Image 1 (tube, rainbow, N blue to C red):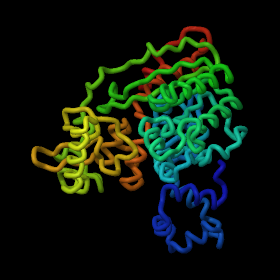
Image 2 (cartoon, rainbow, N blue to C red; image 1 turned 180 degrees about the horizontal axis):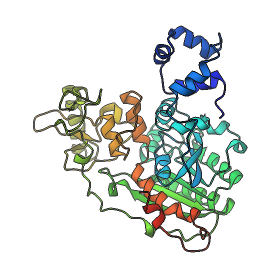
Image 3 (cartoon, rainbow, N blue to C red; image 1 turned 30 degrees about the horizontal axis):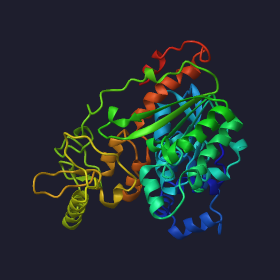
Image 4 (cartoon, helix red, strand yellow; image 1 turned 135 degrees about the vertical axis):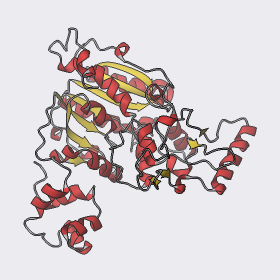
Length: 420
């Protein structure tokens, strides 16, 4: 395994545990942990084995999980795209995510990530260091292309799209890795606005790069997550194969839009759910009062909405109940929760969704670990993909790679249905 030294292992577990937690477990004080991390002092020789055996998630060094294809996870976030492809038998060989809080959530949920190093800044990675893989997965940053992102950058007089050097050009880091490793296929995810950004010129550059410069057969489609979860969330999925396969979006199985309502993701608050601190409490697992807006904030949001209504604008909060579906959950949800406010009855102040409810809204299972603060959790789920959407796209992608007739013949889509 690549994590062989005490310092590398300490870096790995520090993405999951605090210094205080490590100190308590190892029966030392926090200053000792800090000295080990800074290499001011050397830890005892047994430390590496202790961390491997007791602190890292279970079975990470002895996993015998069989895989049918391999992939790399770029701009991984909290692993939503990864979950969709692991559901169909894939094994992750390489992960890249620069945000330290997202790294913490990712490492808390994917034990075998310790089989390989989680890389931070992909722009600093030599493409030769990326292992050979079957599928490249990348949810490259969308703020440079999103409607909200473009509006904000315009208001600040900042560039956006490919002119945005910090985010927009990260697509070309994806392209250089595809060029170097030539995976059999790739899946890229971004906001719907990518298609129309800069009058379509941005998307033309992307397609030209993928099709003409890299030589891949490309298929793209905007899919609304409302088919799978009670949230209107349109994202573009770009699929590419290194050969001409019989891939078609017509094979997607999309449930009826809006069939699933918010009741399916809300805490029932009736005792049928075990309380999960700090989200719910008491014998009925009631939602913590901290998620109810203050009266001052609620009054501000109502006044703000009325001001824009009179001006003929569409700005305002989104008040919903359990029988509704929701607007798009955004990374700014931690600020005031205005896009999805849950009614608590007439005359009562509404509340935000809890981070666990946000996880469910994005299609994550209840055993998904949320090891970060509410603020970071809201950001992470707001930036994530909807897992069931990715899982369904993976269902029709993977057989084209696994089948012996993948390139040029018919494939059996029944394979993937066995692992749904």
